[in-house]
Amino acid sequence: MTIFKEKVDEEYVTISEVKPLLSEVEMERAADEERELRYELARAIEHVNRYAVLEPEEARELVEKLMELDSVNEKTAHKIVDLLPEDRTELRSIYAKERFALDGDELDEILDLVAQYV
Image (cartoon, rainbow, N blue to C red; front, side):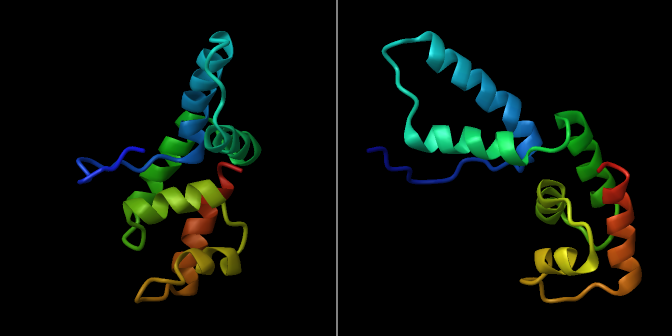
């Protein structure tokens, strides 16, 4: 068991960006007969294969466009790209823990951006 004492760095990535990285790990493990695919890794691979809708470049581009909006920070932009909300209710659920609520125009602006990629 490894115990980490401090977080050195943090970077947000979308599911779409993780998918090729996990595919690479999966292929390396498959090539080495002595290394098994751990349960957690297998579940992560299954998850990205099921939910990664966009290509990594599209996901990164959408994150950048969303972050240009005043109401979207980096963490929220990544959540939006991973979930690709289709309506105001789904989008509001992403903002449920925030201390502010978006008005209809702000919600529609975000949804319009998302719709360009879906």
